[in-house]
Length: 152
Image 1 (tube, rainbow, N blue to C red):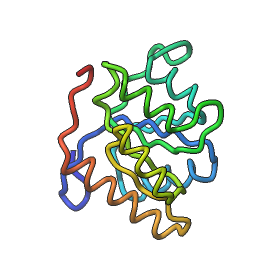
Image 2: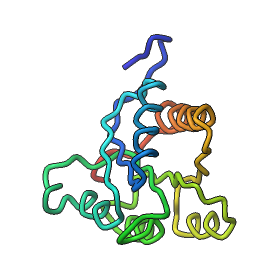
Image 3: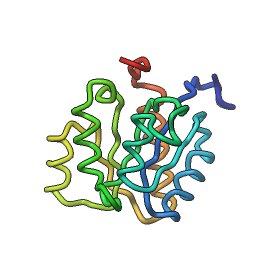
Image 4: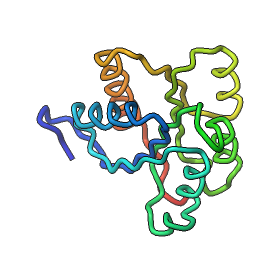
C-alpha cells in the first residue's frame, strides 16, 4: 500500500489502550492526519485490554493486534501490569508494545523496559508535538520495522 507521496505502508491492526477520551480522539486524528493505514481498536482499561488480547467474551472474534499503544495510568489494571502479562504470555509476547504515556518518571521508564516494553514515549501535551510523535511512530514501526507474523 502506498500513500500520496509514493511511500509504502503496511496495513496493520493497532490496539490503543487509553482511558482518556481526549487522548483517544487526538490519537485517532493524528493517525488520520499521518495517513496511517490501520485498523485502530480502543479499550479503556487494563482488564479490557487483556480480554481483547486473549480474545475473551465480546472480543472472541477480534484480530490479534500487530502493535499495542499502551498508557500506563489505567483503571482496573494499570499499564505496568498489562505489560507484564503480555510479555509473560507465550502467545502475546511478540506483539510490540509502545508505552505512550504522560509520565516522564525515570522509575516508570526503567520499570517498563525491565518489563520488556519495546519503546517508551512521553506524550506531549501540545497538538503539534503530538502529531510529530505519531509521525515518528508511523515512520519507525510501520515503515522501517519488520513486525512479527501473527500467531508467533
